[in-house]
Length: 286
Image (cartoon, rainbow, N blue to C red; front, top):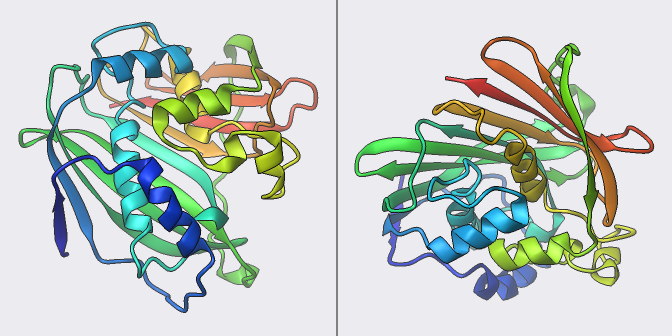
């Protein structure tokens, strides 16, 4: 697979004009770009880490939350998706799942090497889904990996769709919490993450894309879930989530955690009034 080495972390903000331009182009492509992006010897900005910890609900520490490295991976993902031969308009994509594997804790003093590439393109009952894959190394040691799944909505035969996995059976609740999510959390997370998709910023901009109000970032919600387990996480684990219905801001949501086995805990975020699901996830020890 062809590889392109980057000299610095791409600016998400600087790529937005290209995101907009590519979203309105008609494309007749049926394959994902065959390209790997690499970024070596990247340092962790401690001020940025502190800001991330604050907005996502983590305590301040030099040990990175497992979700933090997505902050460094996401600009590479965007850079892949603004390639001329990327087949889908970015503004039409729906983030449906994210799986992070932490092989060991990562300290802010460590420099990391990042690779990012496309994974499989598959049929979905609502269109087509594709994966973005990332690996993060310290030296030659693999310390973290991520699989991000996006959906491009389009008409397709249901017979082509991959059947949904069975939902895990309910177990005894460990604890429950009620979150009052403020209306500005999308803007606050956008400032830290660089993900300034207009659906997350204001009601007026979200309405342009069919949402009645601004919606929370899926990766903020995932990070907030992870923060509920601080101090109780193993050194190596998988953090896997599926994003369900969007969280309309401001929001009152419930968080529930259930221990399914010695190595596996399931959690969910749901609307506090209707019970409709927003996130379903799992933490599994390695």
